[in-house]
Image (cartoon, rainbow, N blue to C red; front, side, top):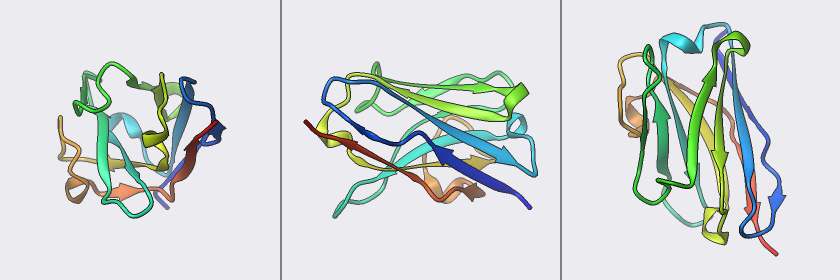
Length: 124
């Protein structure tokens, strides 16, 4: 069974940092582009960034560029999202998604599998 499981979401103070994990089971994430998305209460979901299959090059939307970093550990079959300088506006449920025929984009409809999400709350 193909599965993605996110973890690492917690309550963090503004300006803080957090690393989320996206663990794959049943398939190798290395062959997939892995994207990170978020859904805030009352708002439309948005993509944040992705790490491409093969060369592990990355892509970020402007709103998170310079603050968020996506990386992967193939030995652990896990992709990470490191978030720095967190703001209250970053509060959301964060999801990872895997796409086989996707590259350099964070349009969720183009991805094949996604997880259940992990809650990140940025508040003092």
